[in-house]
Image (cartoon, rainbow, N blue to C red):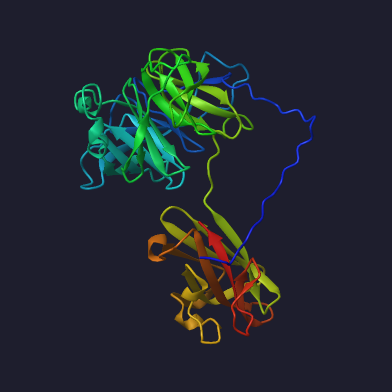
Length: 431
């Protein structure tokens, strides 16, 4: 969609004598125990819960609530609270157990990536507070997607050395970083399995010294990697693998890494799973490393009779769908809802004079009993978008239950009006 909205650059003026605080990057913030954990490498955080597996490569996910931050970092470990356990089965048949050894939370899909034995899965976790059986959908096989990497010590060893030590979801480009057990490289795949390449981490001398285990995403085009058996978390360039710094020294055998911007707020932390000691360690990381992205959101006033605000129209989106919710306020209720989404304004049904034809909108609902909220879901794939902008024409017929006044209403947040002579409005949501 072209020519609807425009924006300008914003200049930030920083006083010459301003002092910028530097985070104590790599400082140990906490040591957290994981009751019931035996030997495992997996670890990820969804903004509320820490998730791992109890054994190396098992069809079970254990979910923990982290404890409050410790006033005195370090051992003894403060125990996290076990919330639930999930058994994992293959979504293809609903029966076959699915084993995982590494996990990564995907905040856009709100699902969990898992990997083991040359297989990468996407797991629908459901309610994280309920112990039950969840389904995993197979996504791709790294050795099939990257056949040029198959060879001694690489993917060909996976059936015999099935462990995957590190898995990270990269929200910046919807991709997966994949680290086999104690490896030389970290492999990069698009979420659809397309092989994007690899990085070979190097030390300060520029030498590739291997032993890569866990991986998580850093700021400014960097990765943090664990080095199994070396008690080291290292920061490297995401493109070249070049050494940037030794981030932290762990107490023992560092495995999977994950980011946590919540538990120690306003500080952010990288959580390092230990293989053998039923715990993870939290290390302070520079601000801006670990933000959990929110779904894109556009909130529009629902305006009746051209000037009466009777509610809101909220539009959110993820990688798959656009979600539209009408909500009225005060004494107002909805008798009808008419909604059309499109790539261009021309995708909205209109008369030759440019007035919207609400009766031809895709979503048309008349309520036998008036409502105060109504929601619609539209797959993005059905919109045939040329870019990330969605035109939203949100119309309703509303009634004041006290006065009986009935009006037509439109969602309007940006002052965009149809070309016709009536006052019909639309707005734009950016994915």
